[in-house]
Image (cartoon, rainbow, N blue to C red; front, top):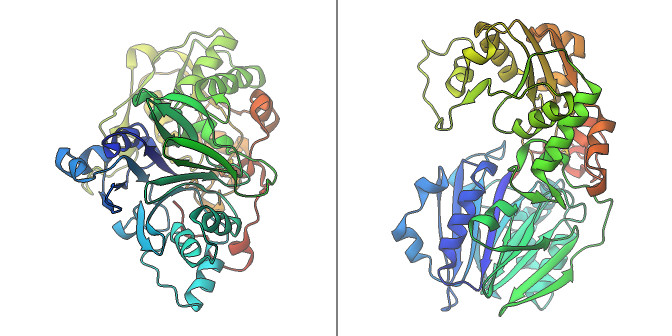
Length: 458
Ligand code: SF4
């Protein structure tokens, strides 16, 4: 879970990368960084922990000179939140300065890392992305594109990656296409980004997705499509459409809002409810709730309000009672809920802790009946491809039956979207990875099978 952006052929490219990161902030809030490749052959870097808007100012951006830049916003996972794990990673190797940003999770990173360490490689952080840099630097191939191609061919798992070598920019997606990556054009320059919402903010025209297994090179204003790897079973992450991506983005050929509405409509057909109003758990569930309302004819209301200004809040131990974290983030609209039978649509149920607090909030606001509808199937398996998810023991859908969960959450009824319903709703854009719902992992879990923990993710 990270956001990445690459800019080339634009004056003050770092400023465009900054705006791109701003649009991708939802993909990670722990740390952010920008590198810029200058005409003098030097790549400059600035990175820090925190939110994008708090890290960069006019002065830091001005010092990142050049017409080529990379940006990264990081979501901390078990790999650690320290600054040494923030990206871009910038190194100097025999071809000049190299910078790299990565979104995804490499499933054989620990094995490769061990191999590299045994050969004398020194690692600075714990993230899997550093393995890529070492593989590129150690390649005996003559050109950067061949070095990168060779390095990427050794990786298993999820990587959407943007690399600059001097002022040449490379962008690639893993052969399964787990994580998104899109290409856009602005004036005579190009932008590569995790989601199209970054292109919109930059007034860039969306050209296309980078294809699974594809690598492109952008040099002197020219885009060259290079194949980086043999295609496997293509499996873009359906969870991006369910929850993670912004609804105003287009990914994998689909509108995220359109996909979520289709999930909501299918959910209404599969899991109807007799109720007075339907509302969402904002914001990621808004589109699914609208779809549910459209299909069922039950009026859409704003029953829950989310506070958008909640960052990392210090909670005094005396306040840290039941549901307090939920109450900081959400409040119920009593006038909407009082005396009503309500359908609450949430996009997914992972740990279930937020839902339990929300149901109490909704009941306290006077709702007579609470019917919880989930716009995806039960999450029963962890993700090893770059979305931060708890272990199986912490996944409530893996631990409880629907009826047990209904009682646990204290709702009058609970209904999930079926796996078939979810995949059918977006089948024209598929096939997708559904492993966290189905357990069907398409890319080999090499580290896990060899007894390593999959700890590093970016
Ligand atoms: S396991 Fe789930 S979250 Fe992970 S890539 Fe597959 S669909 Fe996405």
